[in-house]
Length: 112
Length: 115
Image 1 (cartoon, chains in turn blue, yellow):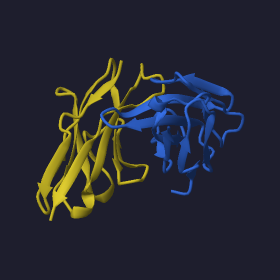
Image 2 (cartoon, chains in turn purple, red):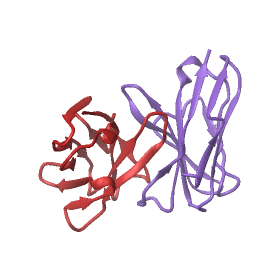
Image 3 (cartoon, rainbow over the protein chains, first blue to last red):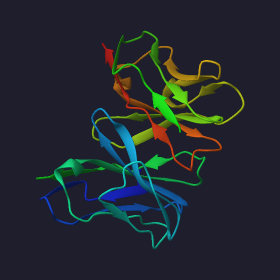
Image 4 (tube, chains in turn red, green):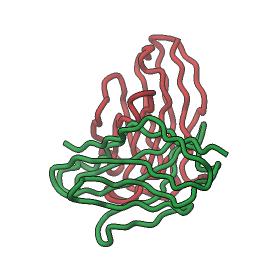
């Protein structure tokens, strides 16, 4: 769905490098979320944001940083990538905390 | 705490047969429940949700799910499976009062529809 996009779609990096994954939504949804998907774990919430300048930790926040200066963007930064952060990352947005979350296409990240 | 269990890693079903994907949940209060589907190399797509009201919820692509409070279940069903239904299915729950605006996802069920 063109309403929420992620970039890059694929990324290879090395241990210790900083990586930023971008997420952009065109619906003006208040809530945005970052998940990682790993075999055997399903989706785990990394961080979420209820509005611009409001962010909160999810289930697995260690090693990640987020910001939300504008409603439509919610970048996720790995400050010093580790191999355990190799995963598929999904961004999602929703109009409110009880409404349906809509997911982006994902970013496949490989940390060597 | 809120959590979801999807007990079967994979569900195999013949095309044309009924499809059931099981989900049980645990919340402190009352639940909001969701089903999503993921096709290969794609993001999750919303199928249906239960917020309140009728326990039988109808969603996209002919899927439905029944909320059963006594059994804390929200099984996904389709009367006649198609090969194109082969995908990964996720159940998710949020506690209405104690959910902290978060969804808890199950580990997912791989559905394989055999022609």
